[in-house]
Length: 286
Image (spheres, one colour):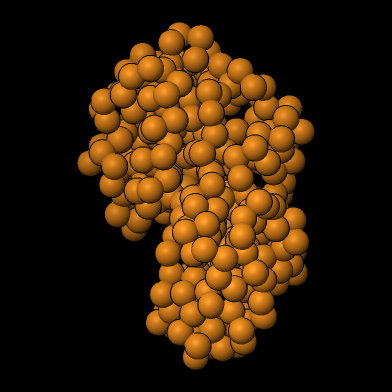
């Protein structure tokens, strides 16, 4: 399948009514907003488009909105936010207060705010919620093999609150909950992934888009923007949406050149991932 290389989103925008835009790697880098991306989204909305930020952040959407404010992402750049944390909360609520073992940093505890939940050690838990590593600055998935073996021995079910494998925080690359969940899955563990590329988060995001614009957009008029082939572009393809791949994000080092990766390098990466977006841009800009 062919794909087009773009320098500007303005040439693509008229084809779509709804944009489902990834956050980390596209709108900000975990430290500061990407001004060009924010400008592009605001211009798309000014032209009548609807923007839903869709993220695998393992936190409720109000928390993400607060974080976006801190990074100076304008509220005018988006209509609403949908997070994998929102879906995880729904799954926890459905378990009616069962004992949970939480894998993740203390900052993620907000995912349980207001829910009937009992925290328990792994030996007494009824299920597991993984929102990340306990310390993503020093640990790797290999540090969790013994814990995963203990969970597997108890046949514990895991909810993965963030299916991403890695994320860039400034110039650092850090492991995410998806890397732990994938390890547990390879050991035979039962895992439910709350976010992209799985359908539930897209259905929820589309419902928010329909509420914001007062009508349902056709799949052919919906564009997914993201920097991850595994989550953003695979999810878009499965849902029947067009995809705009931001090559200067999480895959930039693999491509070798952040600003101008070659068509051959991109094609080889897409073939290996078995997903080909319709369009590619180094960074989201109008």
